[in-house]
Length: 266
Ligand SMILES: [Zn+2]
Image: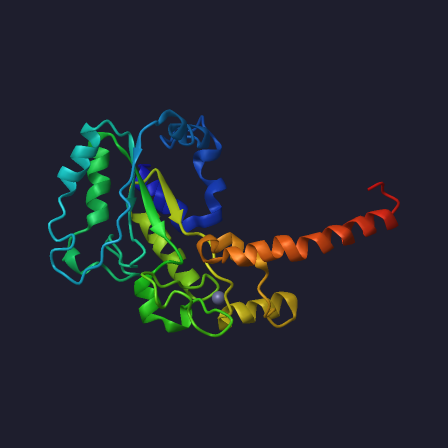
């Protein structure tokens, strides 16, 4: 069994991995054991990735992409592994897909597949990058997948990247893409970028899930902690100092009273 077949079985079989000959390292199959599969990252010291998010409104954008020259330079520089973009925050697919929307300038080519093949030819271990949530194409074409703030607007409407909600059918889209990528390419791993909700989401899918799991409406008050986690640059200093000066002292007093009431020494 070659690596591509193995990957395909993983993609299609899902939880049936345990039934493969992996469970028996002594079997005649050339499939490496899980221990062997996990060894290579610790022996790989130089990994490379180019962080690029390229749209396709101009034919020159990626139109002259040369995978052989690209991977050749990376291999000659001594890199042992690379994380290659299958998509990016613009949401266009850089692999030959029947699931997503392909970059217009691929024109029948397969940018990602070409890179993977060049990597294998030159002994560079290929990994697939996949951007989730930040996805302009799906944001534009599936308004019902958008992350919505409490006021019903998408908080990223005015920014470079649209964000879509993993509680929407977008989740199924991602799973289908990943199955296709893992099933069709000879990879050593995947990297998922942006695996978080950038805002507290009030889309109908989140509301439905919250109702189903908590039997309640989504809370309308967003805790301060949510803003601190994902909005460092948008939190006004005055707000932070307001909390420190006005809210923390009474909170300390309340905590001390509780400790005293419980018999603890303060
Ligand atoms: Zn949502």
